Image 1 (cartoon, rainbow, N blue to C red):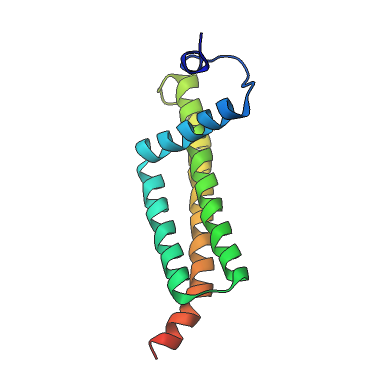
Image 2 (cartoon, one colour):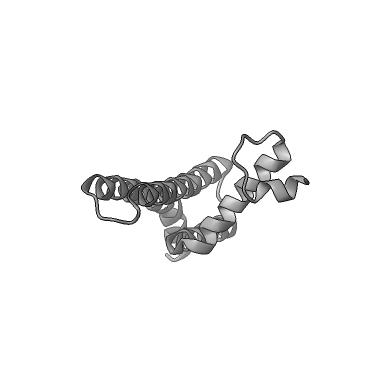
Length: 133
């Protein structure tokens, strides 16, 4: 049996780095395909990167922009995991604790997005004001 055929229904630990990387990439692709908000976050990240490149921000500012982007991506991934696992546990039936878990995970995404907007405003507004004065 080849590694590819075992991967389809793998239940044991990944034994090879390549195998683990394939699963991770599959997860990224799945989130991008299935989660509308993740696509919005990706679009916002691309806009921020483009604006940062056009404004020629400093290396330290790049670090803040990239941190903000990856904090939002990570929060969105964890929100997706929370939704999937809780739905699996309760078989898509309403449960107050599941609602709480989903709401808290979504709140984490919102907080990370607000952080990202603040970072963007702090870095971009002064530079844009200079250009448009």
